[in-house]
Amino acid sequence: MEKPQDSLGDVLTRLYETIDARKGAAPESSYTASLFSGGRQKCAKKFGEEAIETVIAAMVGNKAELAHEAADVLYHLGVLLAAVGVRPDDVAKALIAREGTSGLEEKASR
Image 1 (cartoon, rainbow, N blue to C red):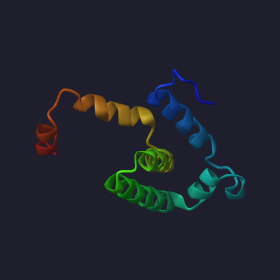
Image 2: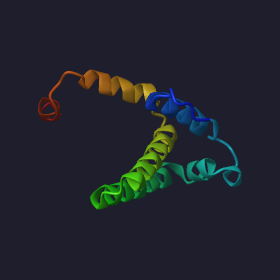
Image 3: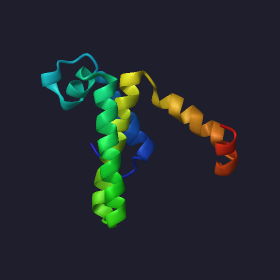
Image 4: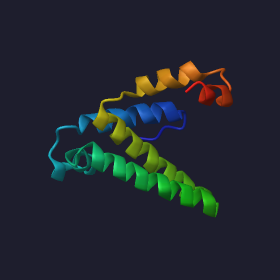
């Protein structure tokens, strides 16, 4: 249920909770469960496909299509994270650790 005051973080938190709840469900019961049934390889492949579609939408410059594809990529990233056992808090911690650091410095430190 969309609420005007919802932040992207709120929406992503609810989305991840829904995704995580589908783990172990019968593949025929939901699209998410069908992705999980294919293992992390299927989840990673689908994320990659959606990422490419997002790049294409950006190149074309269609804002509505880009928003749609970005939503798909965020959903499939959530599925991939859940399939591998990475929680959104793990991603948040990684982002927080980078705050205030130049992107060039962060990349050089790897």
